[in-house]
Amino acid sequence: MKKGIKRIGVFVLVAIVVAVVVGGSYYLGYVKGEQQTRKITVEGVSNLQQPGTGDFSIFWDAWNLLKSKYVFKQVTDDNQNLIYGAVSGLVNSLQDPYSVFFPPKEADKFTQDIRGQFGGIGAEIGIDDQKQILIVAPLKDTPAYNAGIKAGDHVLKIDSESTSGLTVDEAVKRIRGDKGTKVTLTIYREGWKDTKDFEIVRDVINVPTIDFKMINSSGQEDSSGQIAYIRMYNFYEQAPYLFYQAAIKASFARSKAMILDLRNNPGGYLDAAVSVASWFVDKGKTVVTEEFRDKSNNEVFTSNGPTLFGNIPLVVIINKGSASASEILAGALKESNGAVIIGEKSFGKGTVQELDPLPDGSMIKVTIAHWLTPKGNQIDKNGITPDIEVKEPNNGNATSTKSSYENDLSQDVVFQKAVEIINGKMK
Image (cartoon, rainbow, N blue to C red):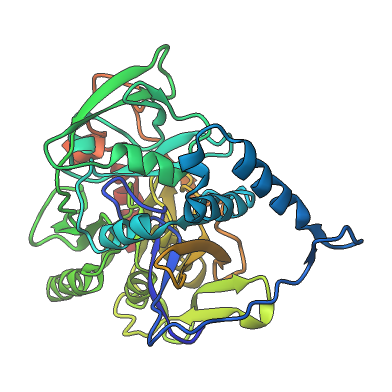
């Protein structure tokens, strides 16, 4: 790991509209001490056309053309903004939605957002293979969730402006705003004939982390039941401690099996995912591998124990809103614990981003690695495939604001299937 770089998390995406930094795993670099004048040598470019190099003279030709001919002189007199535009274009040329350049003001706002100082709607957003903005997961009891936004919804317009060609960060900027203000999302959902507008009032987002209950063999809440049911909504800072509390309750209740529900869990901190996995995976066994371009830099994250639930039947529920740290955990439990994974294929966000500050306060977030499951399977774009596929009903129902498992677990076919599997393993 780079010296002076601090790992802060693995989020599904750059920033949620509630705005966690989705995705992938992030590093936050801090420049310490006084900045010194630096001499930088750029390899592989030249002001002369030579084989194997980029022709950097084109940049200066374009620079001089704009400076001499662009009609609004006050714009081209702002050399620093021209430079920022050039750097932004350089990063955008990677065609990676998770690699982004932030000028100083935007970098400062981004830093505030990942610390939770923001207003938004409470939905993590991403981008699909067709470069379309989509909802990864609405977070429970947030404005987006209460308005009826669902995982997999495509965002075609934001306040009547098309999202075509937008990066995730650009979409986030449009959706995010002050508490009490409104934003309108034009949504298309699979199964709909037409789009639908959702007017959402922004708010400060307080995200839940864990629900815990003991259930009986019928799936009903029962303090004397033998099955622990834990629903995790994210893997943010408090997740390891809150899971510890749930684990202690499950242990005192003498649970003989567990259902771990990761549906619509968009991720969070890598360390939180590893911590939770350690309750199930034998100490020393692989949870996830961070794969770099230079394989010699690969880093393997292993279970730290105590593996309290390593030998009890375990079913993990996922869906297309399960992403990043959720996928890391599901993959580890499937391959290093033998857990049964049911539900729908997960989102497929498995890249690692690094935040590198620049001397003037600007910042570049760049994809530097992939996540691999214990057996070496790449998570990014592939996701985690369930052992038993069970689809949630009524996903295209425009009148339903919540999925069945949010309203009544007794009506949740995926949950009921998990109970059935657990009962079979407990015999």
